[in-house]
Length: 225
Image 1 (cartoon, rainbow, N blue to C red):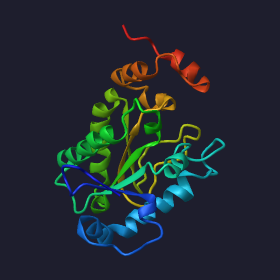
Image 2 (tube, one colour):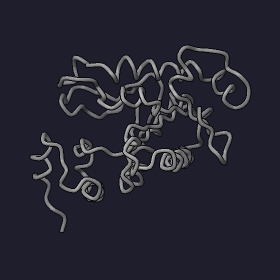
Image 3 (cartoon, one colour):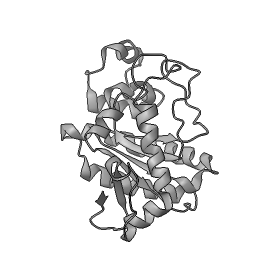
């Protein structure tokens, strides 16, 4: 468990803090576990049983997310939970921006092991306002990508984003609504193709180091003037 050095209300749980369930304890962490321990544990179970395993609709071999198992193994799979309900998209984006800044301090990109780090911000109070989560993700993406970061939305809608290898598959379904912060990786190119600024940021981070299976896609992009 990690507490923000300047804001004791901001707490990150590691998977090991949550499974198996134990006494909630005192203080802010104990309060969050009493209120939302079931949701936090459900997300860890989902990560292990869904993200870390193959899926028949995925369209390729391997785990749904190739990076989650390493993140879990290294204690870099960090979970926050936002109690209650933000008063609209603007407040939600402010909360996520604070976690983004903390993520940058905890897992600076120049440290290689940081690429396994992720922060999942659970939003259990927004289960009936999934459109606001999607809107916040779209707005935040423009802020995150120039810094070499990605922000993803997960919920049981599910988000209307198709899989890369099977257009009929919707891979971002999760048991609890959340927004997820991580570093950009080279295989993110397909998620950045529709925006010139996003492509420019990708090039700044990776240059010509594009994975072999994406080189044809990269070459198809018209170079920026």
